Amino acid sequence: MDGIMQYFKEMLNETTYKIILSKPKKNQNTNYRKIVIDKVSEEKYLIEKYTAKQVFHTNMIFDEAFEFVIDLIKTDFSSCNAWDEKNEYSFYIDRVGNINFSKKKHSKTAPTMRVKHNKDKKHIIEEGTIIEPLIDLGIFTAEGKIIKGMYNKFKQINRILEIINDEMEDLKGRPITVVDYGCGKSYLTYILYYYFKEIKNIDITMIGVDEKKDVIDNCNNIAKKYNYENLKFIVGDIGNYEYDGEVDIVIALHACDTATDYALFNAIRKNIKLIFAAPCCQHELFGQIKSDKYKWLIKHGVIKERFSSLITDAIRCNILEYYGYKTQLVEFVPFEHTPKNILIRAVKKRDTVSPQRLDEVKSLAAEFNLDPTLLRLINM
Image (cartoon, rainbow, N blue to C red):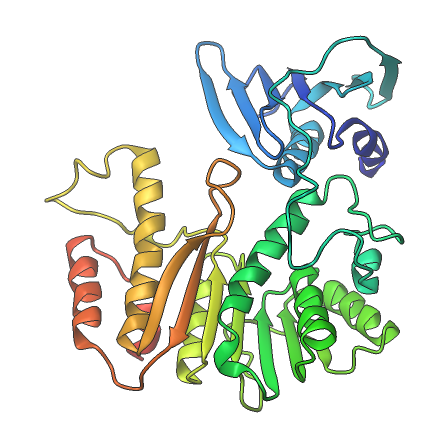
């Protein structure tokens, strides 16, 4: 099935404004008869999932929509049609697995709601900047142009870089060490290293930690290729890895579920000055949450899911404040683009604890029958 990627890289591009998935495969568990995806702004896609009697709506950014379509074609649907500014595409897998693909010109006018990229938008790292590792990683072309389909990723990384840069004043003038837990492909890791080393002339050491050995090996090879001597990548588990030395900044972006709690716990134990965490998902409390007093509040699945997600981060912030951190929850991308848009920014302000903050967490946990990982870790 990997061969389908060559077709979908052509079909799904930054000018694609409509996609229709249809013809559900037999013996699949999907309840959806078709899925319609419309581009409604520069970055947002509206997803409409049709059952026999209902339609469900959600929003996604480009990267999420791309992966969403690929996954559904591999598992649930046989047919996909797509339209961009110039072409209409048709993709179909027949009963014996043969792929039928066609592409033809059309004269339709794309919806007027679609907008062009705002080329005048100023970022810390501008398009055209030659950051060689990001060419290898598929963010930039060799000329510094943003690869089609990576504009949203580039914009998100710049926004997080802005948030981190805003807090760097207190660390100015001395060497700093950054640990990036769950670094993945390390787009942000490389941009941070480049920005602080090459542009700000800060003596920086960065360590990326991730469980995937193949990803880490690739990151180390790229760092070695461009002589990034103080940028290292380690195969390790967030819950167990500890850097043998002083650390100034901890980053944990999209660490899944309780992995964020372990990253925060490691940072708290070492009195890290700056913490930046953007949780990927918060499943733990959803499975625990109960309340006789407030059962009306959580009887609807969608409310229960969002409520458990929000109180997960509220608990994390209160525990950080208990240990002397000033915290903020920052939307680094708009909610309509992706619900995974909240970043915890924590700055160490004092060494004394604030008992009220911990009492508030314990009271909430008792009311809703919660046993959050971070609370359990600090009580061990």
